[in-house]
Image 1: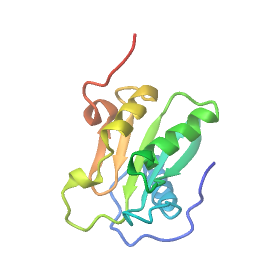
Image 2 (image 1 turned 90 degrees about the horizontal axis):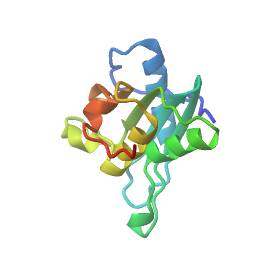
Image 3 (image 1 turned 45 degrees about the vertical axis):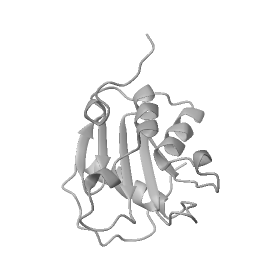
Image 4 (image 1 turned 30 degrees about the horizontal axis):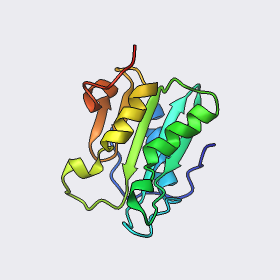
Length: 146
């Protein structure tokens, strides 16, 4: 499923290749459908796999441990569609305050591990307002079963 861009963001655009800029816009768009009544922190993610874009948003729960992050909902959407090789990832934490510590914008450890399951070490990961990292930079020592 691809959430089409339906609004314009006021953020200054990052200098990204067209395909990654498109992915980041899809992540920002997906953030609008986040269910976040507790944190009020809308996060969107977009994954390119098999030539398709799969989006996800965070879905909170009153029992915080049952909350699911945007990166995992996007990854699971791709996997459920039959795509187990991630080609690129974008994440947008649109409610983070300007000038915040970049750690607030980064995927959590659980999301990093899930992404590492399906992405090669050189897979680009675009984090809004941070830049482009590789999967290996995002999670240098990912747990892998041989």
